[in-house]
Image (cartoon, rainbow over all chains, first blue to last red):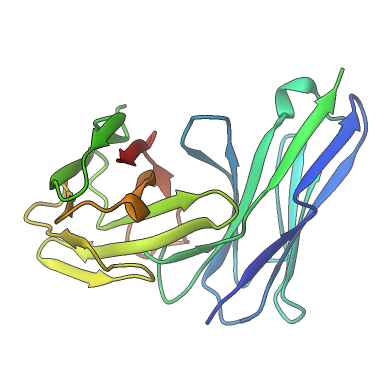
Length: 113
Length: 114
């Protein structure tokens, strides 16, 4: 059974700092890995998706990497802003699509102005 | 674009009552899924569908039923509500195959069973 772990559970950093969020998974047979953002009381918004054959994806100040062999992914956020405060979730997709995602429990990020 | 729409946003049920959580998407996605989110446990898959008329169980299916008669709609039925089903429920959809498009989520339904 796939298990996804995110450490730390919570993180506070001053505004402007670069930071890294970690995600690890136990079964390397994945279709893709996605990073989501969740604001309090809201749904999930997809930030980045990395195919199993890719090593990294970038969008603006966000960069996600994937090392399938070691079962790890990182989400790098550059020049953090208070608006980045949210819970960040990673999820891995099994099989051939996104119909079955296994989620980590998330990292709650607080950016201190 | 509406994306994935869930109704209702909030619901309080008494133990033993039944209800249906609605989910609709307007992106013509083949894949649809239901998750529940509980504190400290992340999101867990309840049921999923890979197309109209095809459904299957996820990790925590007990106490829930689904059907998929159209591509757009994927309702989740609670047969006899229990306090353990107090949770936030999310519906998701994504397209079939291709380069691995991302999953889109609704805003959630917060359910309390008393």
